[in-house]
Length: 227
Ligand code: ADE
Image 1 (cartoon, rainbow, N blue to C red):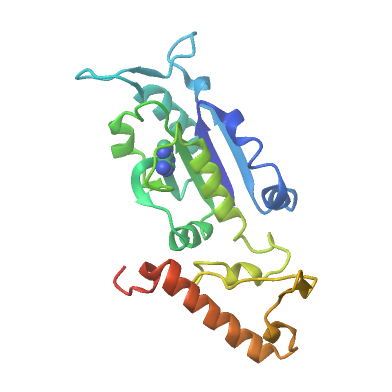
Image 2 (spheres, helix red, strand yellow):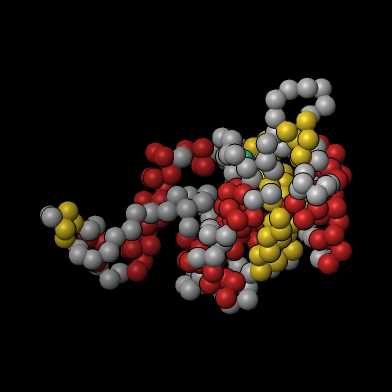
């Protein structure tokens, strides 16, 4: 998979996307992430990419011209399955959306700043708008990093244990069960007996029950079929 990310602050993306599992995904050639500084397409030699908003009001708006030139120039070399704008007023990200996006070949993510991007870019180029939660970040970069991480770890071959992503919280609309490691007794706090039983069927049953009860108490909305 290839992900291109368009941003006024591409430096913000460097660390989150170049360590741990994202690094492994890149090193194995399973995920290519290319960040692009929007000022490459600035409208003048001062690097301008934003301007005052029509109608007045505080806050700058990212201009059409640099964004459209950037999108068109990147699209000349890559056919994007989705052009995603990260924005607090997009659809709220969940595992279902991450799963869908992990099946695509090429994604372009646009990070907004200030008041956001000129709405004509959204209307004519953006195919999907995603929010990572009901709060406002100072820019879309961290949201793009979150989305890239969530997608990247699902690509086949990225995780060592091929099955482990299947047991993540949310993968089946249930939260993950509790986990323990050695020692089996720490300060008298004991690991549940069933996990030491060596009986995989019993362990599976126990984990499923734990997942259900955790979901019921912490996130009953996930069990609500209409949600
Ligand atoms: N940009 C600013 N806030 C955001 C959010 N919550 N999700 C996605 N992009 C954003």
